[in-house]
Image 1 (spheres, rainbow, N blue to C red):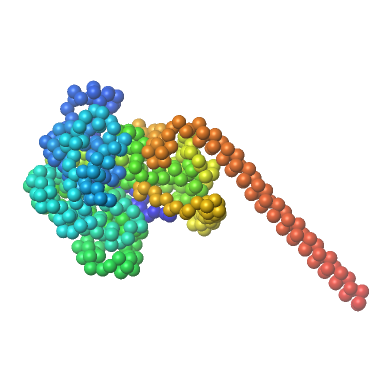
Image 2 (cartoon, rainbow, N blue to C red):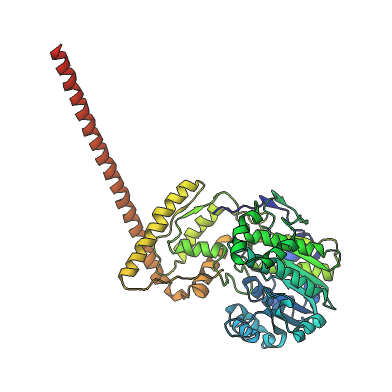
Length: 515
């Protein structure tokens, strides 16, 4: 499916702030080559801006929230407390969910460097942005947050493009309004940082670091969704969205409108990251907990399942490694709190002006990498292509996606297995080696998502070679069959033509003889 988006983004002014922090390029390169231990003797102004402050993170159990939490704890050791708004789930209270969160390999480095920091500084607070009023907070927890919190990172949101309108409004838009209301009551509030998206104003050809009018009045939309049931909301969706392609873009644009209303009343920032993808450098290269972005594409193509995509292959994929996005949040925090830059309120975190890589390049690099790091039990040899023509794409979907899927399902059914619906996880780049980055992505996906240890690589490579020859032979047989059919049809056509010619000749001869 094609995705509408601005053709380009205004380059982030955060880069200018980074340059002001270290204007001597030679010194910067020397610093980058030092180890963390060697760097510890230098002042860290960004970490100092977090010192003795308590932070509230919403969406802290999500992909980006986990990386943000880990980064603050590891790089800002003087932070006082980090509160995570966590909803009880499957009978587990917030503290149980947080303990499970910390079993992720993402936190292994932190636990080895700062033993016990997670239990000392991270506090789970039971709440849910879906609940109104007061986010379902107990009176004691609300008083604690209002008394203690200085910085709020609001990242809780649904990122599904196909989320039903009512749920998307309740989560993304009303949830933001409730968080703003809570932040107003915080006695020590120094910053409310709203994590938006670079794709919330899709009607703009060029997206600038400025505020845009929301597509509708956020309060009216919230009131409307609160008063109708799910079926009515679903029936209204197309008309409410207008030209916007999905509920995600619509509700995030409404959320920005709510934050903008508080620009003159509260210390608020809006950050617009592009497509956030697995970790580039730290703490664990390639780590992810979902299959969004290039990871899903690499897995699907690497398993031989994805054979066609409806996409402009010359278009640029604006991917942003999650650790770079999180660093951007922290730089923006420092710039507002310590540098006291109160004029700049909206920042872009995008990569296309720095990392120019097209979808075609991603596919080509992915092919090479999946040859080097193949996945276990691939369904077919990786291949396929991108199509600009929707008709051609749909034809390929039928022949190379649907027919093989139905065939395999039939085999599974005949083998006596019950059909199982597998649910997938919803799921500045200078010096970024694209091949190395994607290798880390596919290696991490093997280990952490597909549970395929690296010691299975030799067997996977043998299977890949076998599937290569199966693919080649199948294509030869398929095209040989097509050629045979074409020749047969052509021979039949010639026979019919000759018959018609002879018959016509006989008829004409008979007429001449009669005359």
